[in-house]
Image 1: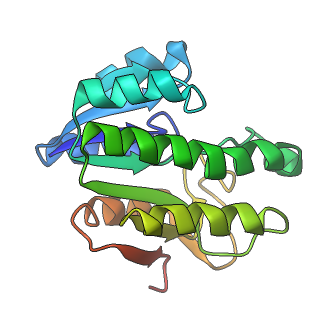
Image 2 (image 1 turned 90 degrees about the vertical axis):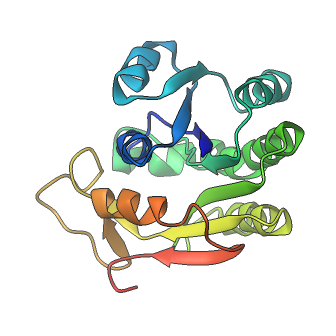
Length: 194
């Protein structure tokens, strides 16, 4: 399957690429950071440098790759957990405008599958953006993946701290995501107790 992975350089994206490639999928890995393209190539993806908010360039990039499946793993989060409130508006924009742009690009490319990252808890702010994000994905016949809080190397929790539920070890989250490539439209919860 040809998979266009938006958010490929993120904490779960970098884990998904090798799993997808190992299973024989061809992967385009999108990042907005030119400096991350080489690392995506090393993981086995065809790097695509594009900003999800540039709808024209995004559509062109997705159509050029010709995916069967588009996966939305985009977030706009800081490196430090304490700064999350400062990034709330930016992350909410990814969930709304970014999702609309990615869905439109997927439709233009003729992709028949769409999977999107969401969360398995109610955020202190931005709940409306999460709900809108999920509504858009489901209305397009996609799959919403409600992940628990990631922990493990490269996450806010790191390797030595386990967050409270709902949670999921990030490598396990990636493995369970690959199993959802052919899941029917709906909401799937990916947490340790599911």
